[in-house]
Length: 470
Image (tube, rainbow, N blue to C red):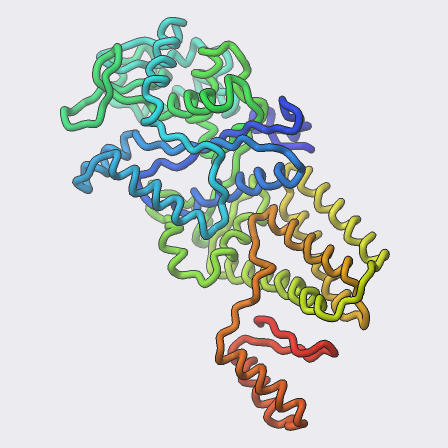
């Protein structure tokens, strides 16, 4: 298996540090609002990666945090007349409510930053003791230039970074810092009504970057397999995580850095983000879509490093493609009733070869698009097999199992459930079957036309009437 490591900008062989076990940390949301499609893209991308590891037989220790204290949390809570903890509770609950329909598995551990304040304070003190951080007017800053490898993940020179950052610093903050590139690991409380904790440097709160350094090492150890997140986190967030953590532990922090691409919107394919105000929340979108699995399928079947162009047209295409797979599954499932005992060796061989192709695609940096092409081949095989005069139980079972399993890696399920059809449509199908049995072909054709207008396509087979959506 090979994965693309952002640190080296190359595909590298992936071998877990511990046999049959993978330790993985993915940065979670800052919980001051509902998650948007960009947040969901990251969660779905790494959930799919996790699912593939589990499909391969690994135990995955998957840690994904909630940032429940930062400047945005404080500002939003103040604007809404609530407290930071109450705001966090509201949107953490909303996160679970919105991700459940998308079949995003809960992390093994989902820590909150505010539950780890003692560990954060201890971490900051260690950085001070080691000469990597210093206190200034109640703030504590990290000496970026003291860390020899600072900026390597972002593939930038620290002097260029300083030039680019110069316009973002106010005079008061510049006065507190030894160097413009130094960043806060602890922030002094600026107002009496601000949420804060007592520390050796006075009342304050953690900086954003230090939170993930503490939570990742607390739950996965000083050195672990994979750290993931959106590509926008490579700098400064993940860059600063590396500097802080390796300065404290003296060990390599992470073996492989994986970053997912943006979600873009509009004709200009502009990045979707809360700061740009062009985002669609998952909470709102779920009220508009009939089937959340279409959104999951749309997100999960684009290779994680590629950008996703979110549009109504692309969502409609995803719906058609998913229905194509579901139809193939139903066509084979329809034959369970007349399958005879035994196996079709030729078909079983084809299935085995297709599964091997699927695995090879996913082993190549989780190339879900090539893997999906294999699923379409399997569906084509399923459709052809369903048309055979005689089918065998073992082969029918294997085709259904593999479609469910391979789509399950993408997080798309529900194939074994009976397709939705309301009572009125089912009554029309039954009436048409009766009309055909009575050779009333005019009424049979009339009902077929009625159902076609409703997007229901009928197929008459020797085993009975099948249907699927147009």
